[in-house]
Structures are given as structure tokens and as C-alpha cells.
Length: 501
Image 1 (cartoon, rainbow, N blue to C red):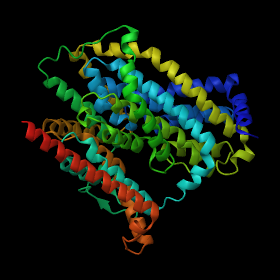
Image 2: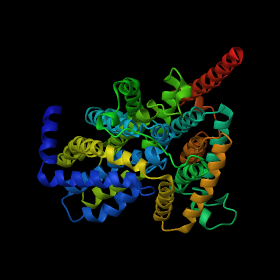
Image 3: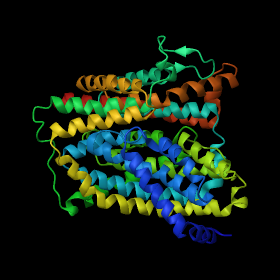
Image 4: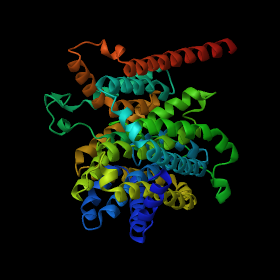
């Protein structure tokens, strides 16, 4: 069958009343899981997995897929309104999204996040249908050397996330790498940086770290504000809440670049929406005519990362469906759902179960439209949240974070970690250090260590293959170029400022 015939067949499966209802249920629950800190796609999908055993395979898989890409929509809401990342891939959205909210432009930020998510998600699904097999074969060319080079590139982009000097950004990245390796060594099981603590042997929770560095920090900063009774002023008419023509002009290329970055990184195991959103933010700062706008309410800082994480959510299905390789932990749950229903994802899926393959893919079109329709009317309601007086609003954020941290593993230790890093994040902000570089390095820390060691084992301790393997060499060269350009451009800007003063 041709592409058109496959799409028609897929929509004939996805548009049955039963499958439409489960798609709607999945996207609703996914949005809710994105709004609630600490839950995320992994927790939501794991909770719902037993339910899928009671319903047909296609319906259950469509519902779980709806939860997965629905989380990317919901995660931006609390990031923009309260600087509390509902989902880890929405951490970067806090940086400029919350600044826009403080400036009375929460509606524009939420609107561009919703539209960017829909555009990127739809383009990602088009790419999934058109390039699934060849792109999966390309992703197989990535070995430990290439993954390590890609992680180095991600860490170099850390410098772009820092509003201060490159050196401060690199320092925060090193702290994040150390924190990411707290716990038992993945190969030898030897304890690292645990100081004899049993709780630390499991490592630090990314959710607690993120909510502390951003959510609790925002509460402490807000309590310090002298004019805490006037949190933000904003307009309430619907036309004033949506992105303006100027917003669209500023965001259009950011959305397309974010879509491209996210689509590529979604193919790679361990990449996914989180890495895609961080790198997209760094890319936007590199392309910006005035990088100093970032961190102060630049709408491209919302459009790019939100597009990237939704595009990555779509392309992540390519290795799962065509190779049988789940690239993220959440999609490993979906892989388990396939197996429980007796369906084996991989190269033969198109031949053995074409109804499930094409029905699932076409349901993602329907789910993306549902998410846009669901999220846009809610913008005025979400913006009204900012009318809540700070003496009530900040305690609510605190409670939200406490519940989110505890619900991750029902462990008070995660709450203590969140509170400690809340104070640390507050001190970082006071002294001009950014939390985002630390968090990205924390996410990449385990992958950095694992791929470096595997690569050195393969090459018997030699670093030469990092520079002789074509893909690895190209990525490392790009990382070096980005780092040089970042240092050079900042020094040039400082020199210009000193000459004019």
C-alpha cells in the first residue's frame, strides 16, 4: 500500500468510537500528569498499564501513547505560571516563560507553547510516517563514541544557558555531573558520593532537584519581594491573551528549529524530550540577534524548547515501532504494554499488526488536535491563577511541590532533597548562578559516565577513535566551534560595552 492508503487505513482504525474515546482519555490524563509536578509520563503510564489489559490492544496502546505525548503539553503550564516544572522536559520553559508571566504576558507564553507543541507534534508525526525506517537505520550508526560526543555537545550548550559568564555555566555543569553520579556505580555497584547513606545509594531524584531549584527557589524569592502583594498585572480579554502577530514573527523560526532538533534527538536512546528542549534553547540563543533578551522573557525561549520536546515525543516512536528499541524509560512501559498484548514491536510489526502500527500513528494526529482544542480554551482560566494574592499563591506552590516530591516514591528523603536544593537554588540566584545548566548536566551525568567507559573499553583505553570515527569527530568539532563562538561573542560584547561606557 502507498502512504495515502496506509493513512486511510490507519484513520479507519483510529476513528472508531472506542479508540477516539481512549485517545481523549489518554490526552486528558497526560495533560494532568504534566501539570502535576513529580508524576511525569513514566509514573502516569505505569499506573495505567494494568487497565490496558482489560481493553483491546489497539485501544490500550492508543491511550498510553496519548498519555506520553500529552504530558509535554501539560508540563509547560506550571512552568510558565509558577516556575514549577510539571515535567522535566519543561524545565527550560521556566526561564523565559515565567519571566513573561511576571510581565503580564502569561497568556501569550501559554498560547505559543500550545501552538508550538501542536505544530511540532504534527510535523513530528509526518516525519514518523515518512522516514521511520531510514532514520532508525541512521540512529543505529550511533555507538558509545557518538553518544559521548553528543553529550559533550549538550554540555557545551550549558554555557548558553547561563546568563552570566561561560565559566560559571561550566562550573554549574561540573556540579551537575557530580550530582548525577551520586549512588551505586552502574557496573561495579560501588557507592559513589553516598557518605555511607542508604538513601543516597539510589541517587538523587531529578524531580526533587528540579522542583527545589526552580519551585522552592521561586517561593523564597517571592517572600523576599517587598511588593509581594502585586504579583503581576494582565489583561483578561481572550484576544489579549493569545500570541500577537509580532510574537508569531519572533517565534516561527524557533518553532521550526526546535522541531528539527527535537525530531533528531528523539531518535536516540537517552536523548528524548529533555535533552531536546535544553539544546533547542541553546540553539535559539546562538541564532538570536540579541542573546541578552533570553532569561528576561524572550518568547523564542518558550517556542523553541516546547516545540523540541513535542517533536522528540513523536520521533521517539520511530525506534520503538520499527526496531523494537524504547529510547526512553516511559516508552519502555509502552513496550511492555505491547508485549503483554502479544504484539512484538520491531521490523515485522508493519506486516504482523499493520492495524496497530497505523492506528497508533494516526491516533497521534487526532490526539494532537484534541490537545490543542483542550488547551487553548483553558488559557484564560490558567491566567486567572495569577490573580491569587501572593500570601496564598506561594504557600500553594510550596504544597504543590511537597506533594509532588513525596509522590515520586513515597519517601520523605525526596522531600528533604527538594527543600535543601530550594535553599541552594535561592543562593545560586542571589549570587548570579543559573540552575538550568546544573540540571541538564545532572540529567546527562549517568549517560556521560556510561558511554565514556564503554567507548574506552571498546578502544582498549584509547581516545583516538573519538576523533577518527566520522560522526563522533563531526559532533566534537561542532561542540568546539560552539564553545569558541560563545566565549568570543561574549568577550566581544563586553569589549563593546567598555568602549561605550
